[in-house]
Image (spheres, rainbow over the protein chains, first blue to last red):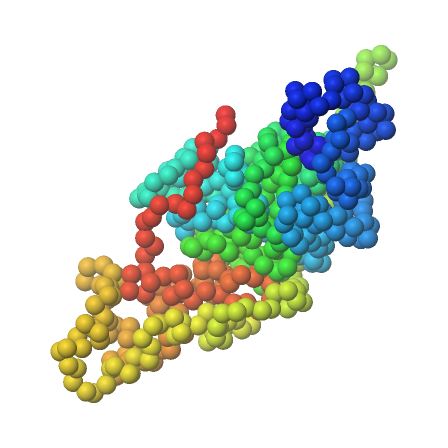
Amino acid sequence: MDHGNKKDAPLKTADLMESKCTRRSFLKGVSIAAAAGSAGLVTGGCGSSASSEEMGLKWEEFFKKNYRLMTHEEKDATVTRLERLAKLQRGVDVQMSNQEPINDVLYGYAFNITRCKGYMDCVEACVQENNLDRQSKTQYIRLFEMDPGQLDPTSGDGKYYHEVPVEDKFYMGVQCYHCENAPCIQACPTKATWREPDGIVVVDYDWCIGCRYCMAACPYWGRRFNWGEPVVPKEEINTKQHYLGNRMRMKGVMEKCTFCIQRTRQGKLPACVDSCPTGSRVFGNLLDPDSEIRFVLKNKKVFRFKEELGTDPKFWYFMD
Amino acid sequence: MKILTLLLSFILLPTVILLISQLAIARQGSVLERIHEADQPFDNMQIESAHQLSVKTVLAKESYQGGTFRVLARKDAISRYRCRVCHTKKTPQARDGALITHGDISINHGEGKNALTCIECHDRQDRDFLVDMQGQKIDFDHSYQLCGQCHFRPKRDWLGGAHGKRVTYWAGERVVMNCTSCHDPHSPAFKTKMPETYSLPLDE
């Protein structure tokens, strides 16, 4: 929530060492801030380089509601604030959306394990689209190189780097399955993660406290944690963002695949589907009997990973 | 009496609570139940942001779920189309050899005695068209009609959406990739290559 403050922390230490202010006056400043109940806002006792506009925006951001409790006006206001903050802090012109789910749409996904060649275009496209941390090499998708007859990705090789496809191997992609009965949602103590009406499991990064209970609860390794401030080169930042999707995350929050919510709610395919050179990935509306995903479910041999857990994932594997 | 109370509080109550919560979950309906209930087609055209595609497409000569769909056009991508410009009755000059032969194309389509030659797909009389086994002329934009003669199972999956892919949008008018958008018709198998990126080892 107060990542700006945390980022400034090393600066404060430097200030202290240069004796620009004494330890006493620094602590005094901090205690006053704590007393005012706004420790997240005041950058310590030694003054701040942030502009007053930035401080004001951060103040308002700090006291906003959970996204699900916001009215339309409040959602618009926070999106406008975050766009302005992105401009002030990073110098990036972001177009942030808070587009609502489309009625009578439930997103579903199918993955063809016969066709996937393990090229990993999907992984790279996902990293670019969703502004994933380049430093820790965070990836939402993991491809496993599997032996024939195996259907459990843990038996496969998830860190291969050689010419693909290898003969007598097949490739299986694992990512968030957007379960209808998602254990991660039930595990969250702050209700910072929930399932949207169109089936996408999302995270309100500003309400996540980083306890990682959801990460422990997910049987599919679908969630990722930001151990540090995510690093994305300024020129590589995808500026078409969504509040619940690929907007910039902060240190200490959880993130996950959102079926590219910023794309799918505009009728586009997720980046992984769009970039797949083999057509192994099928995406569509489960509530539309004429959709491609429904054709796959009706006509192909499909299975879901760990279906016996009752998590009810909206992600099927199929073969030709 | 005491034992009964204990029994009630430690065994019966949790069971009842569990049952109620299970019922509540069941009432929400699983994905499969929701899918079975949904039998009304969704109006894909209502999503206004999914209309503009900057690539050239043609109306497919096949139907999809009773409706029409479009495929990516092919002819514009063929650098030397129209073929009739060179394929005339005139005798070719030897000095034009390097220019007018298709030396850059090597056919790797079909194995052994089933290996294909040019004229099995290209029309011998009219080089601007493909030709199927029954002698029907086929437009380059509709090559799926030709490929589907042998590859009828992939074609069936392609018509339904389990093979190939849509272009950019899941909504809006259905526009799908053509066979030749992904497969080189002269060498249709996918090549081996290095992956686009790599993943770090999983933390245990």
